[in-house]
Length: 131
Image (cartoon, rainbow, N blue to C red; front, side):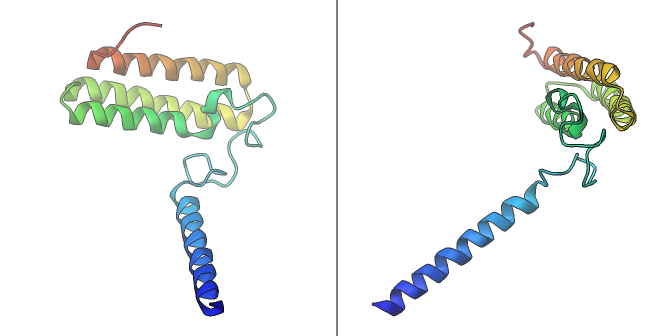
């Protein structure tokens, strides 16, 4: 009886450790999307909040993923997708620059621009309901 309990406890501990290790390696929650350990602006939320994740580096990545998904399903043509991708790339560069400088007014504008690009993707794919 004791051996079964020990084996079961060991298996449970190893399974938990592997599950937690897999989760941690899948997404580094301390990062900003570019592999840096510290987000721009000096802290996870900076001095004035993270603006809905703008300085985390994840907003651009999410839009790129959404754009790829819509293109793969044939809802957005290649020419439009290139224009949208160019806008995302420019905004990601601005995000990196403004968040590192701590220009929170500019970061707020970047956040609104990310929302506009998300609306653009929705409009082009036929799923726009307005805001």
